[in-house]
Image (cartoon, rainbow over all chains, first blue to last red; front, side):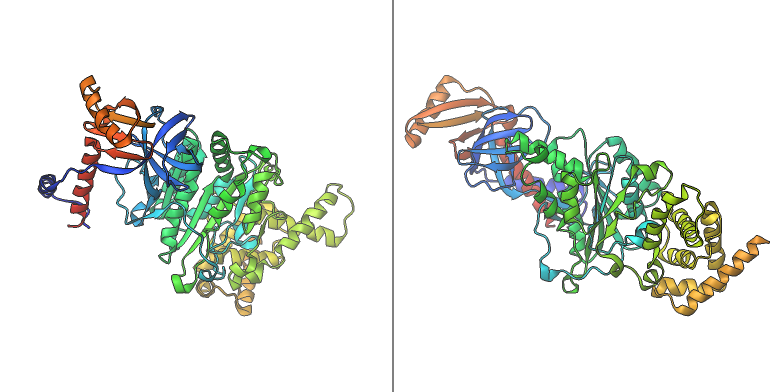
Length: 505
Length: 76
């Protein structure tokens, strides 16, 4: 198929086809609008309509059939137009919504129906995919054992994510949830991972900001953005994550690794609640409909690591859920937590006291864990969580400034240094090798007697120094083979001890 | 008694309406006709009998023609 045609060719084809055209009446099943209010259309007729089928109402109005009853079909409008009058004819298209997919989507911003909204022209889709499709079967899946690096120290070291995993990012508003997701996307530069950022019901200004940040960080080349903003109709917001998943799935089934971020599922749940209440479906806890769990479980199940037999692609999901007052035991959070393979829990208190990323390591978990870490990383990350847990316990005593025994003082010193080392600013992804070297040094207690405030600069400068030395052979070895031998560890530690002594002078 | 919705792009004259109703009664028997005027169909007529729509509108024919253009160009 050619992408562009000569004008003369187009005119010739048009004249030929017009001449050959035979007028035929179109006979198809249809329905009639009974009532239309608040984006919900009640239709009579339409026998044989299927659930989720796309309907066409006069002109360019589309709706999705969701309530199928004997005499009446309830459908939700996909446009915010107010000119659907009772009596209008409704045609069934016989199909579920399809969205465009393919490489031409990279770098573009689309709405939930696949239309470009970035002003950069039409998108030439290589294929179209159903917005909803079944999750990969059990025998089509492979073990999740390949790391997906976020470039964020606290995550890659202690809450590692594997390709094909679903890891929830959860926390109150303004705790850095989106920032973590964006950093993860930025870190995929040069790693052959396609990224999809799905914005559901966000402020238009927030989405604009994300696009700007991703462009500036050079991440748009491998990222697709699917967006529905808060001002758009609830049905469109409801469809958004499914569109994003369909777009991502296309790449996954072609053997590529994909990362998808759903920002956020709380707003998605609210959009679905809106639709359900307008369709007069019975409401349950917190007025959510009975299938509020299912809308998220079927979405997240489509993320997987595929077996080698069908291409070995993967789709890793980072859904985001917003909590109120840190309550992770409320309805939607508990639902999504039980679906995902772990969560990264962000706390306002930590954020406000300057610990950023504000990750509560105690409550965060990755159910895939060490299996998704390189051997090198596993070697150094072993006791970090334990050290931090002990540190948190002892902090209570430190407040009393009492006479503490040596063991306690050591725990406190080491914990403080670790905590400082885990702080990170946005858009500064750290490579796996850098992390391995940093934490090798830290876990051998070589910085425990240093003022925590200086830890970051000392480590950064040492890494710079180390990479430039002839001993950078070790650095390359770790990067390539992802393993850390005993000899190499010793070399690094010795180098560091010399470096540190050199500094004191 | 069938309820039929007849959509045209311009208001039909009483004569035309009677003509159409005569023909439809032959097919459906007792009918109740509802007339709608929708400029968007450009021309022609659409008859909806509660289950099936008989679409003779110009708009649909134009859409079909457009589809033909696109598929011809794409297959080249």
